[in-house]
Length: 145
Image 1 (cartoon, rainbow, N blue to C red):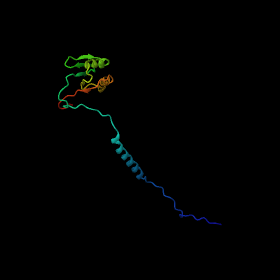
Image 2 (cartoon, rainbow, N blue to C red):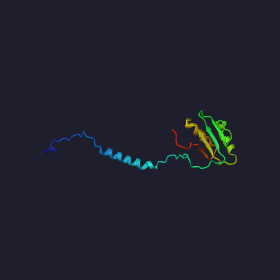
Image 3 (cartoon, rainbow, N blue to C red):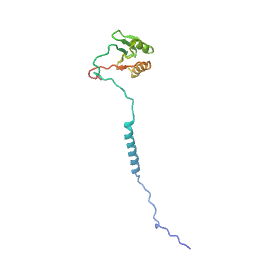
Image 4 (cartoon, rainbow, N blue to C red):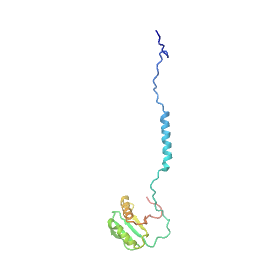
């Protein structure tokens, strides 16, 4: 008869009550490095904001679209009196005001209490109509809150 000998002399494995944090820290460091490397590569939409004092003289022929506090539009060609106009006829009137010079600038002036959406709608309408130079009017001097 063969006798079985047990190794270990009756020792049992102890259960671990501690959590090993090293793999967790390794994963977090790898994720941190991935985000640090990829963050500069993400391109955001570039917004060309108007700067005050960049232009020394105003162009001769300017078309100004005024968005009032009630979000009603007025168009002012050169130094003539502003006339009210609905949004659906704005592009047609701007094209007519530009005449043969399709490169004449269009400036959008809006009250600071007007919703951003109203200004974007005006810009979108002009862009879809193919108006080339559209800008925003800014107040020169110190910025007021």
